Structures are given as structure tokens and as C-alpha cells.
Image (cartoon, rainbow, N blue to C red):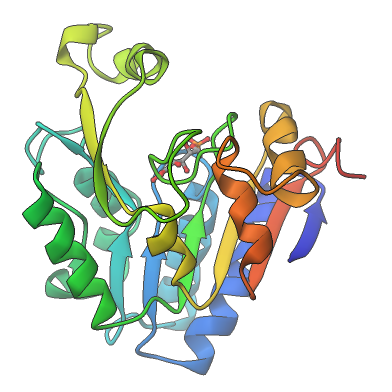
Length: 239
Ligand code: F6R
């Protein structure tokens, strides 16, 4: 595991883009594993900038996202499908038919997503990390053997997300579909970005803690090619 400590969010986003660019320059038809959340937005801005200014192309790339809510339409303003289009896909030349997000509420949808990914093999998986060490929607206690599965969202996640749904918890989806831990571990390379003091404990567990299902991201210690990009605040407990 390589850990790169940056000054702040902007420097971490630029460094994360360097790692991403290394992969796409070596392979113009790379398969990208992508994440939502606030953390990768800076990385996506760098991807968009280099595409617009220097023509870095994603025309031959495929992408697979980590997760999606269950129970809201893809075109809902808060779906991860919408998030990805607004923050990345609409601004680069990736083809719509090459972008994939999990979608559905049953095992068949999960199996189909696994099968689709197996056909491509993810060259680089972008991850954020939850303050409790979650990756994707894999909360503490998720089996390290898990593949794409449906999860019940925790009460805390539902209340945290209410701000995106008119502050009405009843409108917040109660389930999600997510790549599992074993799915994430199949990626050839993992790029995890963490910024902000509220991620410091999770980053400690990820880098220096015991490998335990209580801190899902800790399994990445066993992955052969992981780059962790953190800012000073998120790195405060690993120095
Ligand atoms: C996003 C995802 C989540 C986030 C994590 C951090 O697709 O699966 O695991 O990466 O919750 O979220 P932010 O970046 O908003 O702090």
C-alpha cells in the first residue's frame, strides 16, 4: 500500500488525477471503477479539465460505479446515476453505452452486475471512505467475501442523507445496491482518496489497523496495488 500525504483537498485531487492519468495513458480502453460522494469531485474536475484542455480521451473506456440507491428512479436528481452524469460523464467523451451503474433490487440485478464487470476487469477502482471505514455501501460487519448485494441503509445514513431529500427521512431510500468487498478486491489497482479530519480514524484503521470486518477498508492491506491519497487532516493519526 502506497500512502501519499498532500497538503489539502486540492493537492490530493491533483495527485489522485496523476494516478488515474497513469492508468489511462498506459491503456486508452481502460475500465474505470468510480465512486460518488464529495471526495472524488476534485479528481473528476481534474479529469474534465485535462480532457477539455488537452484532449485526454475516454472514448474507448468503460466505467462501473460502486453503488446506487434502490427505490428511486435513475433520473431522480439525487440518484448516483444523475450525480455521475452531472459531475463527470456529461463533460468528457465517455460513451453513454459504456457507463454502468448497478440498478435493481434483487439478486438477479446483483448477479448481472458481477457478470458485466467480470467481462471487463476494472483497471483502477476509485474509492472514498466513510468515517466508520465503509467502502461502497459496505458498512462495518460486511463479509469480506461479499459480492454485489442489496443493503439496508443504517438509520444514521438515512438521517444524514435526509438533507438531500427535502429534510424528509421518508423520502430517503432505505436500501442500496453495492459492489461487495470481494468485488472491490478484484480490481487491478485501487485509488482511495480521503480528506478531512473526520476521516482520520478510518484512515488509521485502513493503513495501520488490524484487518477486520469491523473496518471494511482494512482489507485493502491485502490488495497488491493500492494507492491511498490523503490530506494532512486525514493523515493526522498515521504520521
Ligand atoms: C460512494 C461510496 C461511499 C463514499 C463514502 C465517502 O459511491 O460508495 O463509500 O465513498 O461514504 O463519502 P464522501 O466522499 O462524501 O465523504
